[in-house]
Amino acid sequence: MMLSLSAALTLALAWMFPAHGLYFHIGETEKKCFIEEIPDETMVIGKYRTQLWDKQSGSFLPATPGLGMHVEIKDPDTKIILSRQYGSDGRFTFTSHTPGEHQICLHSNSTKMALFAGGKLRVHLDIQVGEHTNNYPEIAAKDKLTELQLRVRQLLDQVEQIQKEQNYQRYREERFRMTSESTNQRVLWWSIAQTLILIVTGIWQMKHLKSFFEAKKLV
Image 1: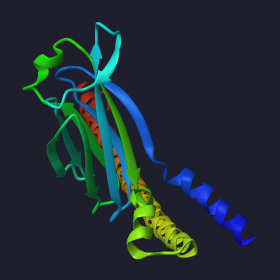
Image 2: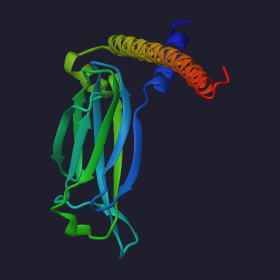
Image 3: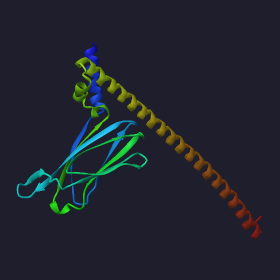
Image 4: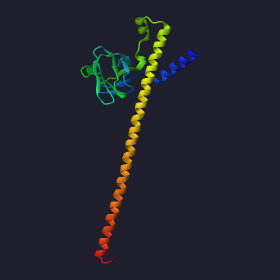
């Protein structure tokens, strides 16, 4: 029973906190950005490798060491928390301090564009969030943990990540509630303003018509 519960928890966590692997193409001056929703105090590790399009072979080949990639990461408040130049293959790490949507942007350096002028650059990007950033075999070897102890450590890390995710969902719900209340309040005040405008317009029209009829001696 405990084993099946553990397996179910692992599958649920794999669905909730996946490691995102993808690749994309960029041009000489193109910049690619990705949005990642991250709870607060959560570690994120990104790994990438680049490939250059080779016209002779008609395929993508490993990029030269001289080609660099610039990585820039902004938090939900658009504050830059990481801006650094890396090589053709690189690894970047950061820890979120504000829950919400983080923007991860990559673009190639401009000084080495002559290496593939007019060509295409393929970037393979892998983003790991939360407990997926832990290297458990290395932790087990360093702390001399048994298989059971390592499994307990993994489960504790996963439970901690679930708590962070739940806190983030509560944070999102609170922001949504505040936005809804603010919108409802604005709609209410707009309705009141429209009613007052109609009343003032009606009074003005009545006075105008009364003055018109008095001028024409119809009243």
